[in-house]
Image (cartoon, rainbow, N blue to C red):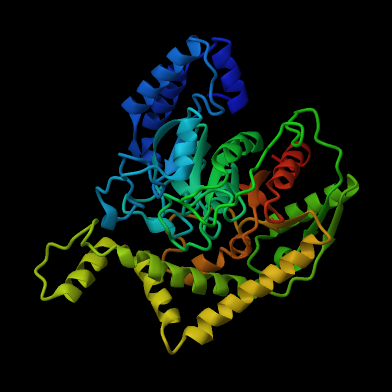
Length: 483
């Protein structure tokens, strides 16, 4: 396989490899690893044909795109024209997209090759990739473990060498947590940095397309390509993102000399849910950063216990509204049972089409939006969100970044938390903060646990400051990796 996008493209230009060779290698790896269940569909012939066209065009000496020949997998919640998109749900079984998501169109415009759709938790609701209509995705490092979710298939596709980079979606950690469990890089940009047009919605004010890769550099290249303004998405950030090589030091022989001011929450690193070895490892990195001349300080943060409840109240409320459109009338699963009236038809179609976790979240969202409970739950959660935003603004007045764990534990065993949804939800304690506040955040694979599984460090920066996030992450991986 190829070490980086830059190295691969240099080999293409030098005539040392071809796009057809690359695609063939990845298709072979996908076939040999199909038991991991990372993909819902493979576009084999289409990818090979695209590779042939790119090879021919390159030989003619024309200008090549920034993602020329780069083999990419996409989560099965992102629309790709004339291809099925199901959100890993029976209710969208067989549905074919009639347009490209903006992120997909930008990939294609820069000559990327899309090799397939990746498995995920149904409608991106889950933390383990056990809630898919296509079955579980397995962690390639230990097949008895979950890969994380909801973008578990996209994470495993990169982890197991089945593509160069992949796209996922992150509503409350669904890119960063599987990156943590799989030992790769996972980025959630600032809310609005990448257009959501063509992303099947879970919770619209939280959802963000994210990127998986084996290096910060590869993720940065993809981010620069797919970010930007979009007439189809009013929440998209209009200010362009330019990730220049001289602003991010990816050299193997050292990082930039900048000294960072970094905050961490002592309450988070000493939380009873956090694995002791993860806590010790991060505290060790904090000390190493201090020894290297960086300012790393504890900041009081007394809102930690409110983050998960606020997140689940707000996201399930939005999910309840967003998923109303899936009714079996216009598209998707339609019950074949005899029905008495339209209401019965809706009930049967949706009960058969949606899985248990999606049903649970729709019901919870409907409850918190109901007349008797709206102020008690939804309004209070919105107030917590505002408090978090204000607190975040104050922190970034004094610091460049915040460091947190990505997850309380390493990847757990398949089925371990299936019967306890509350425990599953509480495992999102460190990731949902970035989605509630719209901050960019990344999980970088710095550590290996005594149990043999990887885990990462989560870094957050201020809104629209992905350059600092990528720069700091590259430095951490170069100087402080413990694997």
